[in-house]
Amino acid sequence: MSGPGTTEQRSPWPALWALVVGFFMILVDSTIVSVATPTLMEAFDTDVNGVLWVSSAYLLAYAVPLLVTGRLGDRFGPRPVYLTGLAVFTVASLWCGLSGELGLGLSGLIAARVVQGLGASLMTPQTMTVITRTFPAERRGTAMALWGATAGVATLAGPLLGGLLLDSLGWEWIFFVNLPVGVIGWVLAFRLVPRLATHSHRFDLLGVVLSGVGLFCLVFGLQEGQAYDWGTIWSWISVPLLIGVGIALLGLFIGWQARNRREPLVPLRLFGDRNFSLANVAITTMGFTITAMIFPFYIWAQSVRGLSPTQAALVMAPSSVLSFLLARYAGQLTDRVHPRILVGSGTVLLAAGLGLLTLAMTPTAPLWQALAAAAVLGVANPLIWGPLSTTATRNLPMADAGAGAGVYNTTRQLGAVLGSAAIAVLMQARITAHLGSGGPAGSPGGAGASGADLPPMVADGLSRALAESLYLPMGVILLGALAALFFERPRHLLRR
Image (cartoon, rainbow, N blue to C red; front, side, top):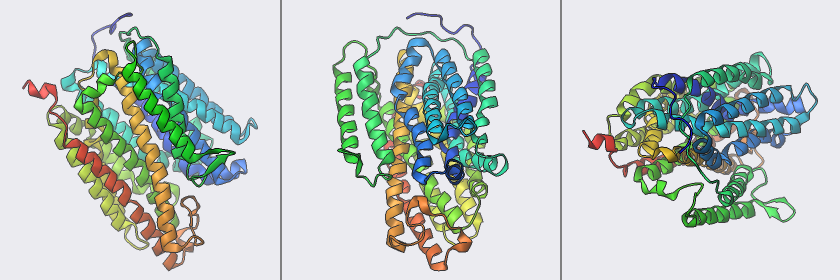
């Protein structure tokens, strides 16, 4: 072990709040661009597939390196890695916003988004690592609740913030807004985040290559499969081939990690802890569910009910507000109550909220029904995000905190990619079933007519199709509830 430990004994809370600023910003950027698709199509004179790459490039660059960037925090310390990532992210945000003025075109914006994603990938595992290494196990629940609430709120706040900025200032400001936030977040992290002890690691270069290429092939195939109709991408390269190669390489990666007696990128001993393994299963279902529910809802709100992007996001506002307000209390419960109870009840409640949302998604139902469903989701979220991340990291050895954070965030992102791919296919199938392949809004991305323009039969059919699509995330989150049933009682509760 080399390097200093924490420089001084002080409350870890200021450091956590400093990290939350940057963490919130990078998660908002995962969804904020989604509401700007029509605006970007007009600004860059391109089609929807071109603009989708603005989001896809960011998510790819964010998700693929997480296993490596988590380990970098163990090797060089989470503080310098986080600060580097935040600086990269902030500068790339300026590049994104200026891409139109500088004449860089859509390709310049996409390149900037790749750099943004790499910065985000450097940052995310470090936030979780700092919590694991600075909060004692018996008080970690409240801290992880804030971390988890940030993830939950940011996912839903992105479309709202994007809508407000688009309506008032223009598309450039969905990126420019990151500049003051990034600078403030960097200064706060520099001043408040402690220097933590580093651990000597040999970098597993073969593991890096296998995991990086494998994750890229898998994530790209799943994320872009719908755009290529799950067929040929170029010449002999197809979506099924990429997915198959990705799975094969990840299988080889796991085999190599088991055989590597020196310094594996992902120590498989982490999965010897039952709660870590189950928490990764559950967070995969959570990432899937939250991502999958967003698409049908926003298409329904804008295409059937004729709401603006900002108005549609406001319907989901109760979820974000309640998630944040209840995070502290959920965190206190996390340190006192068996995670089986919290995560189990939260996942079931989330499924119930989605059920209520399906009932509200009709052409004529009063909007208060959708608001009520969003409120139920807001109560459920803090019972899942924080308790899951706490349960995953509670028993991790400090030397493996970064590796564990990398694995956890990778599975969360994979769940989100799976949810995005699966819901696109299901929406297409249900829309075709109700409206036919040639009907209005015949594809998930093409639901462009407003509710006032849709004939009643079309509005009803589209509503049914989108509501039925929510049954998929409902079922997946119940798999998370099943995983939660097998959580063990945390060690700090056994000592009481």
